[in-house]
Image (cartoon, rainbow, N blue to C red; front, side, top):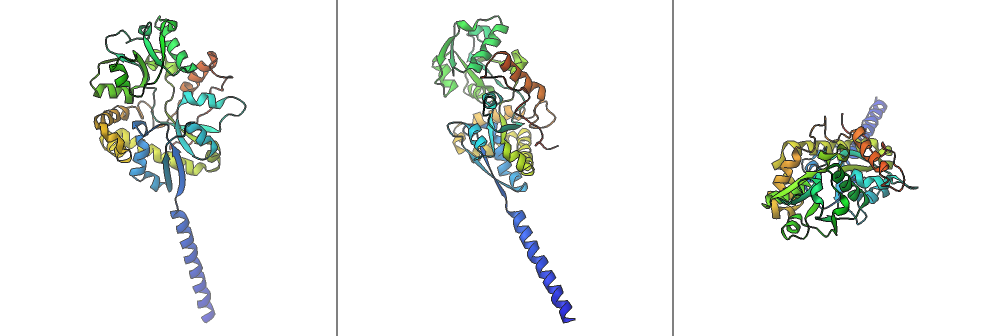
Length: 331
């Protein structure tokens, strides 16, 4: 009898110790680093919502959100020093060609459609691409940038060679237009366009995607490190699912989400009107006409990369289906 009791006690003790060990292991969150593409703004709201609302905690993940290095998020994610980052389909293209393509993959679209285009002072004739003829455009002097403008001008009967290209030093689109420093600027309407509106500046604007659907590419996107995605796919899926919850909440609750963004980026409180208006605008763009947040359409992805190939804008041709996956999105 005494021997049986002793064995039973040993079994119970072993079970208790094993249970404690398993509980401690389960409670220990997995750490992930996410690198932004720029300073915090409304493109990133869903990330901070997921942090604030505990969606990462529920997924068993501790997320460190960091600013990008000078080389951008792509290099940091490719190196494995960050597991995820924020990038853009057009910026990714050069990283996918050559002898050593970066080991990164887009796993989710932050917004469903390209909201970029050309902004100008109202009434100066730049409400269509042809109107850029004879005007001063602030350029980054990038091949894809100039080819895009050339293409939309051609479609509108305009001549890109008649545009005066001014090296861009624009950090504030409102000031640049109000001071007459330039006539036209490439912007993302969800931030810079809304900034013009809230500042009371009358503007004209045309979106590239409205002129040619080939320019309805994905910008921005969430990218992941290929090794991490392959070796820790379960963790990657839990991370993306938490992000999905964050962006879905932001789509449904723009005011509350803007408040969360400003909590994590208090410097934005200097212009709360812009943050609230931008969040209201993007709340309709995060999911838009897609079946779920993050969905990447293969045809749209390939269409833009085929255009890059057709116009010889990369060092070598890119596989139009390379660089993205929907495999990590929640069902």
